[in-house]
Length: 280
Image 1 (tube, one colour):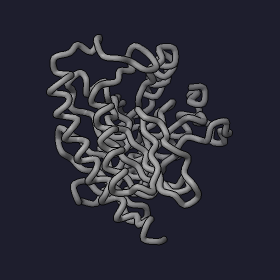
Image 2 (cartoon, helix red, strand yellow):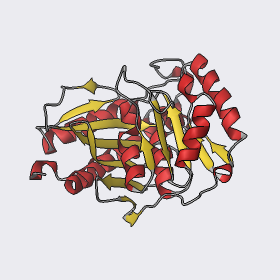
Image 3 (cartoon, rainbow, N blue to C red):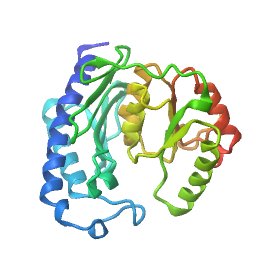
């Protein structure tokens, strides 16, 4: 690996830039959103898929900082899309300026800034920063994952019937109903369910062993780019979405994101498959 693609250095940089964006996210929320009703905020895919000034300003900041610090890299962001397709060997940053925007807009503290780094489609580094708590989650490929500098390890639970499993629901009402039906079936087979509204932090929770497993359908690349690597580097079995139009050999659904401790990963995947996850 040449010095332009040093995973540890990119991890460090992802933390630095994400922390700047996290500070801005709180400042914008206090300045703009604090006096607004969520109903007044602009939306994207549905009435519940809100976009805030925080999303837009934080992504602009990240793009500006990366343009100075890593001008040869390309960026894919939730708000601004892709500025260019990466050339072979070129670093690409995957930016979710505020993951958990609905929580953010409502004043709930469970939201994050997420920056993932890839080369040739392979995850290399990433950071997930919680603006309210200040917690710093990060990882570099082959070097493990950490929370505030402390190494992370996933749950060692081996009994899926006791597992706490996190998941999320889509913005589209029809799809959300189907997903809720699956959640109801899963809930009867595991220890408990968590739905917290921030995919990156759900994946980090797997990394920390706070939850034993996680699955979700219909996420975008920026939702899982950093969190999936953090979970994987902490020892989780991780399954990312297939390429557009790709097949679904494991029966979890081509768009599924899945992460679990190795003690329950096979059993949880089997359960989701048996309960019809591929139809979501």
